Image 1 (cartoon, rainbow, N blue to C red):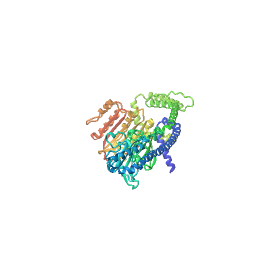
Image 2 (cartoon, rainbow, N blue to C red):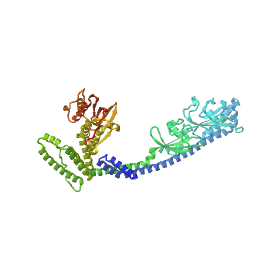
Image 3 (cartoon, rainbow, N blue to C red):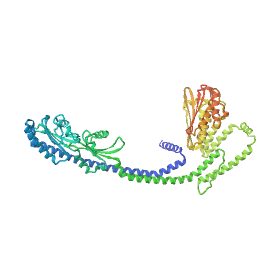
Length: 622
């Protein structure tokens, strides 16, 4: 069983290879043997280089964002500590708490004390643009530097989010414009850090404290890493809003790429890396970590061209080397193949000329041990001898040719021809020449089918079988230049058609469609049953019919109630007109003949016949 499967597999591969010329098969083999090992080595080398570079970048990228996380946590901790010292000041815990009950003079004194204290806190922190303290419910507020809230501040975002935090801890708002209109509106975005002011004795909230910090406070962290050489590092809050980026215009805005925001939100780990492709088709390695203190996400975005940088030189060298060996292989193959096939091509041209009656010799002189040249020399001798024989026969038979042909028709016993062809076929099989055996068998079938039997209407099966034998003979002649396809459903094979109605159309397709074509071509014969009628189609993908010639043929084929006259048809048209005439005589208006062709694309002929229902018996003859 296994041996049969293996044999079937190899036979299928051989059938596929035989669709190509010997030259192409040899060239493909030579190319695979010479180039495939180099391609495999190059691919493996590039794969491991790319993998190592990617692993190194992934590790380095994670190191960068962890370092950024540590430094960012330190910056955040410094500002939170500064704000906590403001909250713990005595002037805040004692005097500020009772500010609402002070008279004007008392409030002026309190204003002065708070400003002195806040200025001291702000003095050594250049990134801090403002500090504010305020009581609950719009009772009192004081600030230095950038004013962050208006006098009526209870409805501001800063006020709400500071007091709404459940744990009473620090609240960071992403970069935003301050909530004060007019003179204090600078148009500069700031980060806001705030915390409720708790009574140190009672533990209740009686106000809020806030810092305004420039987002550029995080710039020294990233600039010292040199991250811009390999990618882009930025910090996002829990909602995907940019806390800090190298592009100032993105501060306080959602990421320009919403798809990236979604991809980051889907990552469940606190730190990891993943591949990401943006909408413009660019691919990135994304590494991230989440800060435990604030919930912010530090992201490093590395473009893949940077990852590939270390492998480009290897890839370039591999491509150059492969191209060199490919050209060298092609050069050697061209030399070898030309030395082999030049003689074969000359032999094929001579054989085509011989088919047309031109006894042209190859005139190749045998040199060295070249078997092809020896073969062509033997062929030249055979052609020369055949030419002499034909000339001698022509001189003997030229007189009264018509009478001799009739005499031969009367004297030759068909059974003698059958027996002779079968004898040739048997001898070919004995000597292992299967092509000759198949050709003689097919020729015997065609001859028997053509001249035996009295009936003019036969099953489609017999007609298709005769066409198959004809195409097999033609395919031996043309080799890989011609293939054929016959597609007839089994139920239609018993439908009745005119005898020898398809073979002239197939001969026309081969002679005028496939033979003039330089590339391989195909002839197809198909049948179908449509609207109660049998449709037979013979098509080829050959050279087609020139437009003026096609119009002439179609005009000759068109008729209104009478059969077309074939006497006026030119070369290639007599067979078509004869088929049309036979259809007319047999079926009259019930049959149709349609010719379509496109120059350079091929020709199709469609016959439409009525379905015969007569119960008759038929034989293939012989």
